Length: 108
Image (cartoon, rainbow, N blue to C red; front, top):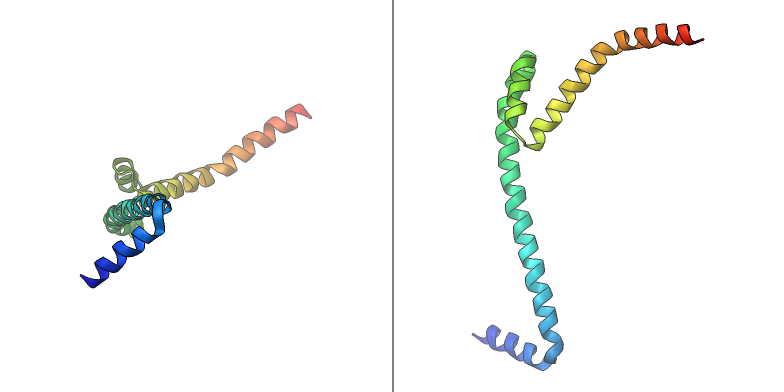
């Protein structure tokens, strides 16, 4: 109770300038709580996807990985999907380079 009285007294002595400070404090606390709950939920979703994708990645089952990543919109799924897409593009790059090289020779 003594702490409450001290706080109210401090607030009253601060005058009208204390109201904007209190509003900014409330907004800051609301943003901090929202970020905490959002990030905690995203961590759970990412961990769930990680546990689903890790065995598939170890076994290199690309089709199943692609299906899992299409169903999920988590950051973990997007990162794995981008990695698979880059790997498939990298496997096709020699063919693309050969085609471009042939076209370049025709132009020159």
